[in-house]
Image 1 (spheres, rainbow, N blue to C red):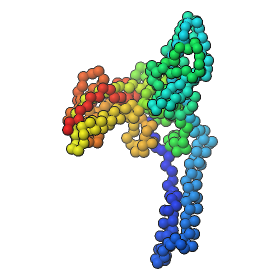
Image 2: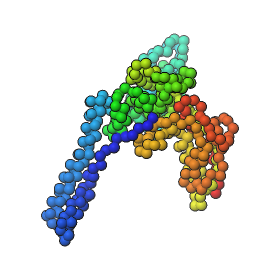
Image 3: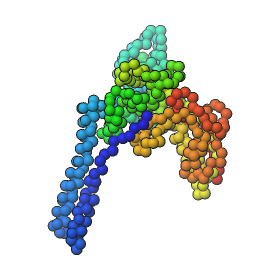
Image 4: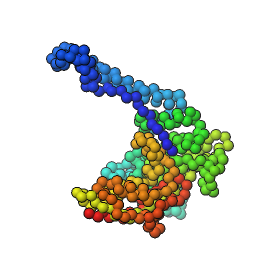
Length: 398
């Protein structure tokens, strides 16, 4: 999926710049004039420059306000609200007498800096008599507050303590990291999203790329790619009036099953008659790499090795794999996704070579995790594949 963002009209509202322009104009008419701070004319110019700066600042906001109103009220494309993060959890009771876990029961999940965040059950859930625990991941927890900072917390096996004191609950264990939390959309972000939607000239997707853009309207979908004519049920291509859509979250992982179902429903409602849209999971493949780099004089081996590892892991990251290289704006490029099925050997060498302190790559081998290392290009399995870093063994030679 490729896109281009909204570009605000450049208006210089800096007070000093306006004042300097006024001084320059007067001096072009009267070369001997000097801007003496004790003179009335200088005071007047300073006052006018300040007022002009305020007016220009207001005028800068006008285009954003106008287009946001246009997109929201006339085109029916509202700004995205903040959303809560969710995670599956397993609840264990103190015995098998049978209990009901009420909606709104709260647990605490601590982030990396030690701050606690409240998550709550979203519906009543009964553990029947004779059972001591729910099915694995059966109860969905939703963050009480909304926002992106609520994503990425916990993890598989994380024990979340109860906020509410309930004697019959022995433990609550998460089955993964929290995901789906999203901040409320800024006006600049909204306009960046509005611009590619208006390029379609129709709210109903027609081309395959239209479907990948439409998928981003579903909260929780961060990147998506469309495969024209692809049928995931039998892995065939060139099927008429058919589009395959794969979507991932901000962490580069395939979206959850509930979100995938929501995306499927949304696209089915958007598609043209007789078109078939299939939402499927991308295949994330770990790549193992072993390398040796030569250190530039003046750098330490440990520093250079750390730089090289960071560069390589950033490159083999499913959250950024396949970004459209034709989009130069970093913000606009962040959500692009072009199907990139090959990990090129020479490209990995190039990535390592660009790390600070690397003089050259002495050697490098790579392979799909678990296979024999070599120097050949790697074809990633599956449709809409993503690369991820596997076992990385690096050496930096002084």
